[in-house]
Each structure stands twice: as structure tokens, then as C-alpha cells.
Image (cartoon, rainbow, N blue to C red):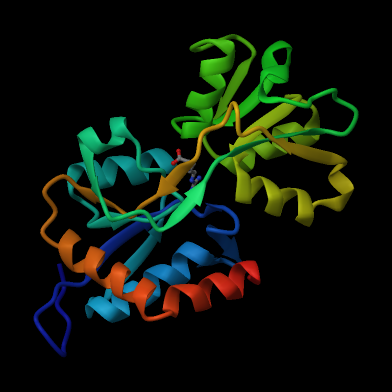
Length: 232
Ligand code: ARG
């Protein structure tokens, strides 16, 4: 690990999966997004330099589990299973799931996906939510390596619906007016959850980062970044 010239803090290795617009995505080859701006603000506050790598979702989780990466940010939900393997900051964003589907499908609730072919990103809370409805490893569930691939399969007709994080669903529908897709929310079916920054278990930097997150929230920087991305 390299060192910073100005002090003795290590340069942190940060991993993400940049297929989750507007949280983390590629714009002209550059990783950008709400999470990426939040990360920059936190790192500045905490006084760490960092290198950011866009690796796949699975690679991201593995490299944090191994301790190869110092932290990950990618719209990652804090849940009980993951808390066994990783440590997390306090929550920084509330989320739930939405069902995205091609116009014409008769979907008014989460339960309506039961008879359909459903695409999800493998290893996500969206995949777990769908398995709760259809059954674990149900043959009508198609699991993709990325959320981007799941949404492409919806457009190509390989699946009828995709269940993904609400803000990502909203962004996708708004940005693809020609895709003829719509979406529904269903708070009775899809629970609320929270994103956190993920560390290897026992990470020594997590306290610094968590404190910096709290400061960024308290001093209005978080609200500024939120305003830039979500306009409210
Ligand atoms: N919030 C969901 C989860 O943690 C989905 C995250 C997907 N993130 C991504 N970068 N593809 O399971």
C-alpha cells in the first residue's frame, strides 16, 4: 500500500460495480454517481487518498471479504447475512424495490410477477425479494451478473420484468423513454432497506470513515450532493 505525502495515512483501495445508475456508473469511461461523490466527500473529510476500481459485483464482494480492498461502495444494502461477513458504516441511503416491466403486462403488485419470467442481478437483495415470491432458484428467475444485463434482457424480451432498487428503476425508466417500460412500487411486498459502505470484518479504518460520513451528513455536504443528483 502506498502512502500519502502529506501524512501517514495509507492510500485506500476502493472497489465498486459501476452498473448501478445513478449511484455508480460509467460516463465516458469515468466512474461517476451519487455514491462516488459521497465517497469523495468522505475521503476528503477523513484525510485519505484512495484508488477507485470498477470491478464486477462478485469480484467486489470477494475482494472486500479477502481484505484485498479496504472498502466498497455500490448501492450495497446492509442486511443480516452480509453483516456476518462484512462490517458497514451507518446507513447513508434508504431504498426499496420496484418492478419494471414492458408496457402491456398486467402488473399492479409484487405478487403479480409470480407467473412471469423475472430478471434480477445475481446475489442482490432484489434477487432475494423475488425468490421470496417465486421460490428459491425458481426456473422463471433469470439471474444476471449485473443489473445492466438484467435490464437489457427486459428490453430484448428475454424476461418480462426486472425487480431492482427503486431509484435505479426510476432512473432507468426516465432515461429510456423509447424502451416502452413502466414500473410499480409495492410497499406491502418490498421492504425498506439501507445502503452502507462495506468493509472487511474488523477493518481498522471503518471508524474513521464512519465518523467522516457522519460529519458530511451533519455539515450539509451530504444534502448538497443529494440535491445535485436528486434535485430535492
Ligand atoms: N442494493 C442491492 C443489494 O445490495 C443491489 C445493489 C446493486 N449494486 C450494483 N452496483 N450493481 O443487493
